[in-house]
Image (cartoon, rainbow, N blue to C red; front, side, top):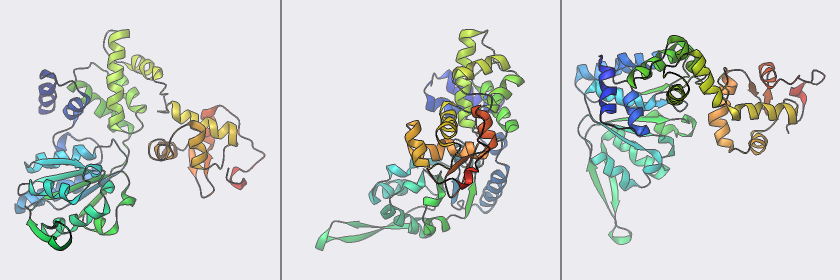
Length: 347
């Protein structure tokens, strides 16, 4: 049994069946166990190796990209490689300067502070991070009015690893304080297949190569989605078959979830069908689409639209969203060839 399997088995033997515990068991512990994101891995290896060689804390790192691609996993891997503690928090939780001060003063020399969704830290709190990241100190105001006074707190030299799905919402002063800013991209099918097989080994789920490829092809390039699909496919195989996942079982399980062979789910198809039937392929505004399918705009923009654009089903223009020929093909509706959609007014 290799180290990955030992870590996974340890979680399962303890009976930690919560989703959080299972996700933790599936996370790769070291760089060599991580699949994909080769450019980011190379950059992190260099920084970690140099920090170890100089015996000093790692410089601050910003990981950005869509959700589910491994930002949290990479932060823990960096901690394992440096043999240091990783303290985890999130932007919305750090509501006041005192919250930040509590986090920072509890750190030890060389510790890693990982802040997920760092763009959601209030601006008043963010300003306290500037001196913490550069000078390893923070100035906190105590009391109010005539009794107000500033107290300077020295903090240990630490590493801040920030993760964000919307790097554009970070202020320029904050972004400039990160030595490395690196983006995680969607995974290709081969890398996802390896991830599926590794996850299945860790949870003791029999799967063959074709079954792993089937799940990978429907996971939208995202390991988190792939792991979620594995759990459902495993349940399906136990109830409907002999417990082993092959291509047929995986396809049947995911069809039950209304995820087709392209990776399109029910909401994706509703978006494409709405644009084709109601708006002749567009251009149509995001707000109109959101109302039509009964979903929030930011959910469509952050969850569904990136995949639809990347796979070439829709096109985002200044006039609005347009269906591409591939998008028309998915809907099964013939495009109105007599009109140029790009010349139509925004609906």
